[in-house]
Image 1 (tube, protein in one colour):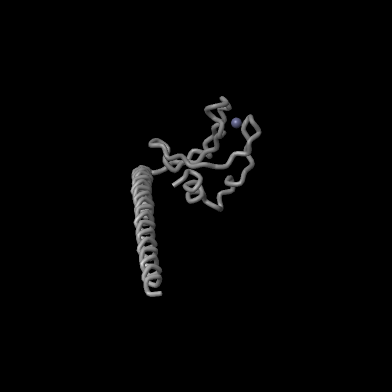
Image 2 (cartoon, protein in one colour):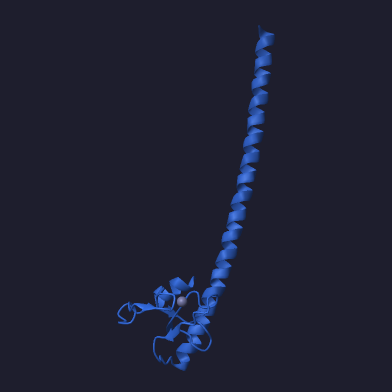
Amino acid sequence: MSNAMLNRICNDENDPLLRVKLRCKHGDLLSMQTSWSEHNPARRFWSCSRYREDACNFFRWRDREDVDIRSKYVIQRLAKRIKELEEVLASYESRVESNQVDQMKVQRKEEAQYKEMVEAQWKEEVQWKKKAQ
Ligand SMILES: [Zn+2]
């Protein structure tokens, strides 16, 4: 799951700070994100997307959100599980794709064989008709 999708799921639509217009030194309009780090799971923040490359250094937590220990534990594991399942899904998708390619190759080969067979029959028929005349 992309971070943008996770952010969408985790954001509380009624949060008054969700639509606050916050800008970094670049003047970029920042949107609220959710941290998935071990120490701050589900904690929301704003940061510049050019944080590393451009030394903007803009970073701000939404506020001091205390996440209870149980939730921290569960959230971390759920996030890890989502990643694992996405990897499994991706591997199935690539297998399905290669199966489809294989099936297409088999189908093309069968079509080519059928075409050859029809052509051979047609030639035989033509020769037979010539002899019959
Ligand atoms: Zn910036």
